[in-house]
Amino acid sequence: MADEHGGFEDVRENVDGHPMRNLLGYTRPYWPRLSVGVLGAVLTRVMRLIPALVVAAAIDRVILGSGGSGLLTDAGLLPSGTITGEAARIALLEQLVLIAVVAYLLRSAARFASRYLLQSAAQKIQRDLRNDTYDHIQHLSMDFFVDHQTGGMLSILNSDINRLESFLNTEFRQVIRVVATVGGIGVILYLTSPKLAAIALAPVPVIGAASAWFLTWIEPRYKSIRETVARLNTRLENNLGGAAVVKAFNRYAFERDRVAEQSQAYHDEQVAALRIRRAFFAGLRLLTGVVFVLVLYVGGLDIILGTPGALEAGTFTLFFLYLRRLYSPMRRIGRSANKYQQAKSSAERVFGILGQGPTITSPPDPHRPESVAGDVTFDDVTFSYGDREPVLTDVSLDVPAGATVGLAGATGAGKSTLLKLIPRFHDVNGGAVRIDGVDVREYDLGALRESVAIVEQNPYLFSGTVAENIAYGDREALAAERRGGDGERQRVVEAAKAAEAHAFVTDLPDGYDTLVGERGVKLSGGQRQRLAIARALLNDPAIIVFDEATSDVDTETEERIQASIDRLVEDRTAFVIAHRLSTIQSADRIVVMDDGEIVERGTHGELLGQRGEYADLWAAQADADPASADD
Image (cartoon, rainbow, N blue to C red; front, side, top):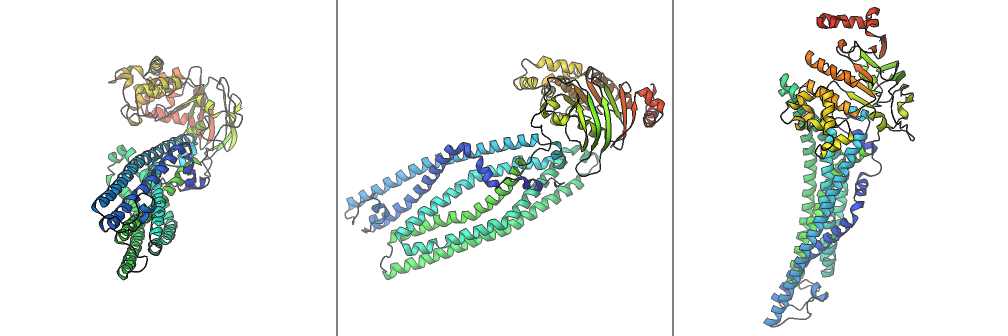
């Protein structure tokens, strides 16, 4: 069950396989880039070990004049034997400098290559994942959008996917760093002094086991934190979207308290996780400190007592240089484990969404008609949202092509729900909805919806220009607007003229190129309605649905919109949900609904003659508005 506050805990159940393995699946197209990047990262870490060997050799052989071999000598990079004389020592020093220069050059080149290749691959994976997730959400059925809030979806598309990119970008390199650094230093320490190497490397399995425990402990907490973030984002999105309502009712304090409650919940969960996380890292540092002291004591005691196999001064210094580099990435394991759990929690939500299949899809062999006449039949239709009480019960209605049907009734009677079944926004629980005699469940979903246009009571306009919003009704016109309006602008203008919108559009500051603002906020309700009608006209649908298209406008604007509607319904099957009955009195048939059932049907005159519910509604509106009494 979806979280009413915006959490997406339910979608985690849809993940197919391990979410992080699914994430790795997105790396396959970029394996050449990633492989070179990994090699570069390994070479970077190996080259970082060379300067410490150079320092140890300089102390032992150049400064102290020791004849000990050392790893560089064993590798054939330095001459063996005791170096005597000033010239020989200077020559040896120059060799060491050359080795250090080459190491730094190789390290710089490898570092650039690895970081560029790995980070650019992470960006590409982020892009692919966001595009796929967004496209998948767009194709989910309307019941998903009913059960899940926009703020939670935005949290997944933004913060969760960004977190996965950050994990690939940062923690992937950290894993390479740990493996290459610990492996390289472990080999060098063992070759230098097996006894001290055993002491230095003893904490490695302990840190690994502790990190595994930490992963298990922190996982449920990060799941909870991600859900809390989604709920907080949903609350913020709802409040910002309803800014006008908050201001109108002066509910600043109430909304501040609601946001503060969600913020406090997020704060408490983060602090609880932070407390254990900090304690875990402090324990790792204490462990590595103990090892540092032990190496200092045991190695120093061997040098003082002259124990056989004791290290020379430079090599002993090498141990401490490497100990610092050994435990820094080891301590980073805990931090990487922390980031891994955060990323895994995000991956569960992302791949949970990708695993969420639409409940309404085209059948295997869909019906794709060359044209749609527009005959619509509701055959004993019963429908309910989920497991709730039925919204529609045994509704039957035959509408011939080209007819205009008005729907009347109280709010909640089921009018809008009935018409949402035509484009298959939802599927019936019983009965069938047919277009041209074919069950809508047998249609190709895209073909079905392209033959049906809907003009809502509060039409949604996208943030963009007037022309772009009208052109949204036709693929070619929309593509042309994205290119600059070439070739299709005249069709947009003609649709606006037919919708009685051209006059006010030309009065706007930039005409058809005027930006309408978010959700069309810069336009009036009547202007938005007329643009929505123009958009529907451009779509040239066989079936058109008006869902209380004139309920929120003044009489003059209603007359203009009604004129637009009259043009739009010519030669089309039209369904008009009416708040003002005067807008449907000329309909071919009027259907009155109550509590999910059809209680009356007929023409305006027939229904008035029956003196039933429609006549009562008409009389009530006539008393409120005498101008509508003339029938």
